[in-house]
Length: 276
Image 1: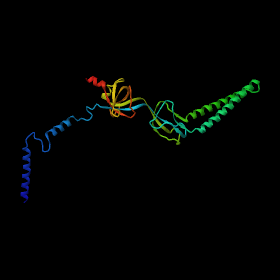
Image 2: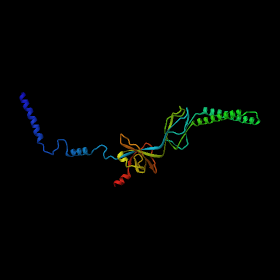
Image 3: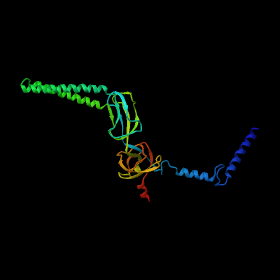
Image 4: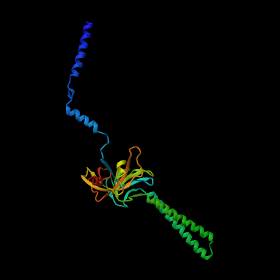
């Protein structure tokens, strides 16, 4: 029985080998179509990661943006704008409860008025010979010290309002009305959409051909429009890891519909004209 089983196994192996050798050349294996095999080979030959992909994307950013913080500790009385609202230059964005600083200012103004009258009285007495030079000098110093304290308190009182440094829009509110905040605590974020710019990172091989004044076209899918831009700045350092260079471009003409944070595809008209 063992001998019979061994012989049977050898016959099966020999038969399989003969059948495989008898297969005609050029005939694909079972289950693989000729077109699929050729397509797979072509794909493996030409699919090189990153090769031939010259598309670039640009990020729309604002030329000016800031986080405005409280310059004093106090309670917020009023927030005049909410998220998304536009405001002009110099507009009061937030106002604090400043009853105590105002009262202190009134007291300092009264002290300054008294010190000034004392100084004037000493001057009149000096003219009559009833006051010496030292008395007049001390009275003048007291009046000047009271005046400087008034100016200092007026400067502190100016912190009761957060004023817009330029026209823009509210991006985020980080505090609420009737909330008490400390000095240096962020209150709101603003952004200026008057002048927008685009940031993009280009591969070094392509970036070195760019220069200030090169024209770009940025296609924004969300707005359905294309916007013209011009390269305004080239970073003076190449990123050592990605071997890319950062480029800043300024938009030209109307930027209707554009908002900071949008992303668009970059088209290089100068490069297309050279190749054509």
